[in-house]
Length: 381
Image (tube, rainbow, N blue to C red):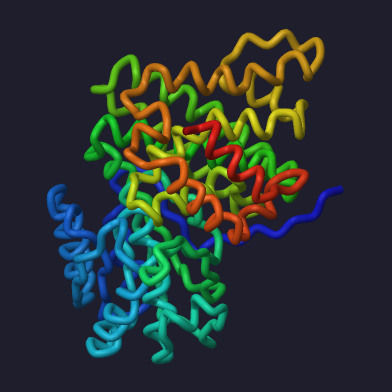
């Protein structure tokens, strides 16, 4: 019998029109909140809604909304100073994956007058300010992990840092937020989530629990992508993708991403390229890389991607996994190659060297070398 540990926040609220529950959750943690977000979320009235909900629950708010996907880790110290000066009792992260990672770090750094540099060196404070996460997308692969991905502004590279266990007290996943995403971004985020689900499924740390979740997520993501391609105006594919995103995050709490995730984070940080685009480009090449390492799993992924498998031998069906991915990508308005993102192969080789330091690589079955990273980048170029 397999044994495993599943880490989850104390409260997870998921669904349409669940955002009002944020008020009572926050009020249970304190009466002064710092909202860490990005200015683009003013356009959908997301920040205003959160402020109004908190106000009705008796929670005073301060807002820091100047973050962007490429904001460096150094911004954490300034925001933490704001939290301390305002005597924040709870930090609320509202935004995409990178914004949420920085908000997690703020909750850690603000608690004991430490600095972001301490976190990046692996030194954790004894405690953190209670933190609530409100993702603005269905793509949050670190949702149930005690980790954050930040950009080291001095070195221009991505860093995976640990955060204090128990930092995330609650996560509120309001699925209506997905309706404000552009069609192009919504479909790209599905491909990014599919990469995470596939890599987690292959992870040597996977269990029957994570495998069940991640294979189901793969089916749902394929179905959502097809529906979004055929009828982008029908918002139901976004809700389906949100459900799959939650399943993926639950599976990754045990399994974790691998080589594709490491490269996507590294390339995004080094060149400020959209991570979802990079992940989509890398996806078929990652599947090619992983297929011979476990043909049984590759065959099951092919079936989950609705490929016509014969189920005679896994070795015969395994190559169809990559074919299923490529079939989806041909219908998306996304760059097909890394060269289309206006970077050179030499540039990407530097990013591959950055990725070599990622702990995510421990999730690659059979291990991964620097040469593997360079070859994968070259094949996607």
